Length: 192
Image (cartoon, rainbow, N blue to C red; front, side, top):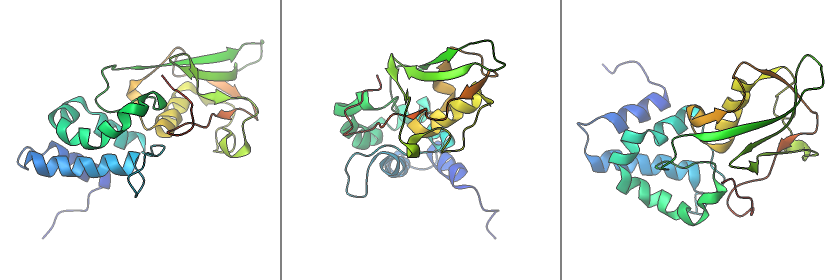
């Protein structure tokens, strides 16, 4: 009788970590996961989509290094556009700096005016409604830690790689019209 059903993330992680499976089998699973995150069904580059927990699995140093040949099947295609991504598995850097531009005018909470990484703005004022932080449910009173989780999901990088210049418990006000800049392959926006 089979054991209890496992969550898909746990299943993927158990396959990638299972040394009893061949490297080829584990590599094939990793290629499938990376392709789902970074490529369209036609094999074209796309803006990556992954929950932070899945990003943590594919960015895991030991797994990625051991299965590098498999990673290269997908990640090699991203290299010419690597500056369009906040981070990629097998990157040498182990942290991604996150800088908060805050306006402290004496009110209870500092006002979020921007977020950047590697001196590239991730947010813009007067953003289209669909990309506004308020449109995706982020409201004033949000903590830096909650914003990091959101950024991790948006940019398909593990949350623990994001290193903010503000304490994680800091609560912030969010302007109504601030939102994410349009990014990804084909947008012309560099993130590093």
